[in-house]
Image (cartoon, rainbow, N blue to C red; front, side, top):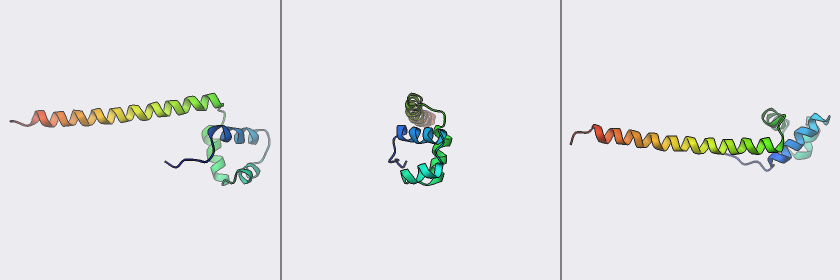
Length: 88
């Protein structure tokens, strides 16, 4: 996954500036990003505070770990079924 050069707090700050009246074009030009990138950020992070964003990142990481654990256990289960189904 591509890493952004902006932190989540910088993204939230830019969105708050837009909510306070600055234009998206002006903010995008200042940050050196495409206007579409700014709108994607706004769609994803709008209405969030820094603490909420931190919690979201923690939950995403936990979800990733749980998915990985499930995949490993599923593979183990399939492997055991294959071994047990063979007649020796």
